Figure 1 (cartoon, rainbow, N blue to C red):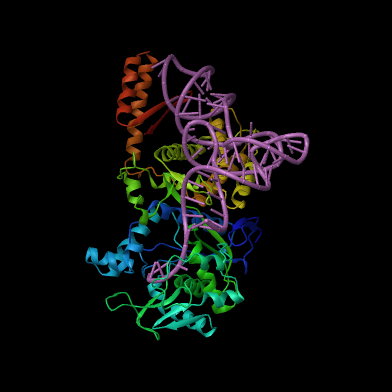
Figure 2: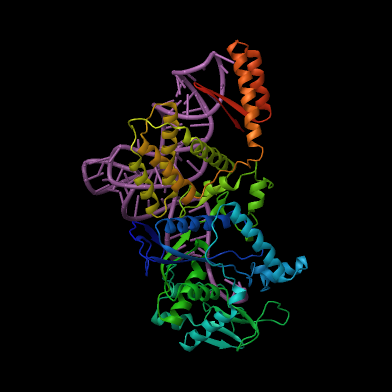
Length: 489
RNA sequence: GGUCGGUUGACCGAGUGGCUAGGUAGCGGUCUGCAAAACCGUGUACGGCGGUUCGAAUCCGCCACCGACCUCCA
């Protein structure tokens, strides 16, 4: 299992060589969505980032178990919600069962992921299906002495944990600073310290989503589900944990604390965090009211959108930036991405027209090595794309005859595009079905030959009319030295 | 206020102590009857001020601006 993959580990703040704990097996856990609302552009970022990682690890022949959870127990929306459960609140508004809301948005998330060509994870566990495991984990933490029960709720004892371990190591936070930064003293009566967090919360009588436990009828703390489910499916120590940078603190910090307190071991070996998508320089988030859903992007139905953008345009747009950089949304950037994507796929589509030469002016193996180098360098997809555009140039030049490829290099080029464009970047052609394609092709042949006749007779009025009329219905003609190509706009 | 990150040409976006990605748009050219596509060429780029260095946009310091996170409840 040779690899040369380096990934940036948020824990050490350095690029580190990736080596799984038990090769060839590799465990990958990524924080999935809370399904209380439509999937938005921000959700696409981690999904695509870790899809690329999943695809690459598979390509390197690791046996990857990719776990991406669904949070369906519900979180608070924002301060204005006064503690009411997010999913519960939405349910009241729409007069639906909480699980009906969950189902609806989970289905739509799955459909959007399919549209973006994001592969399904190996396991997609739901928090509501792992209440028992979460309760067991709480008991373990209590047994080890790092949690305490107050009035039916259980809290994590951060101060005690920090005496033996290091709370804040992932996010670079110092406990003393956190203490000094306490916002207010209200609502903290039950906890020993303001920075303690809930493992189990006693539910108010009107709370719908609640489960029985030895402490109270209530619900698990938010951070718990990821600790419990990652441990169940990947073990007490596993290889890679991913998620958005906004989850680094407190969510991931608390995950580390919970798992370490329970098992006495550092749970995650490599932490990876994707950066945010911004809109006009501000983070896109539901709570900020500036988010664009994927449906709106695909249909163009949002005041900020000048046109619809296809799923593959969005995917390409996201892959054109490195996952640890913010990427700012704008119509100009999306339009540029759309053109670039089409250029790439168009070249890929004509690769079979290249005829092998006796000799080669290009060495594809060098290009291939550069492509691997790009991915090995912390999944540098923008650099990979720049190399693939060198491939685009080679394809077009080979068709024009200004570059030559022998059979070995031609096959290598085809393989390069199949591996990197299709398999790893997960880009696919979006041209619609082929039902009427043959008929259309036959008709086009006839029209093209008629135009050729006119041109042979120097009847350019007729030939231009044919071309213009075709243009009008979205078909453009391209005269080449050795024939005529056509394509739908 | 604390912690962390960013500031690259018209736009997006990589990257490196000297060889200065890529996409989009613009301009010029080749090819075309014309056009399109493709190919070739092209640009006033690295926030400001100092410092280290033979040499910095890349390292260090200061400043400015922008952003993310900052425990309760979830």
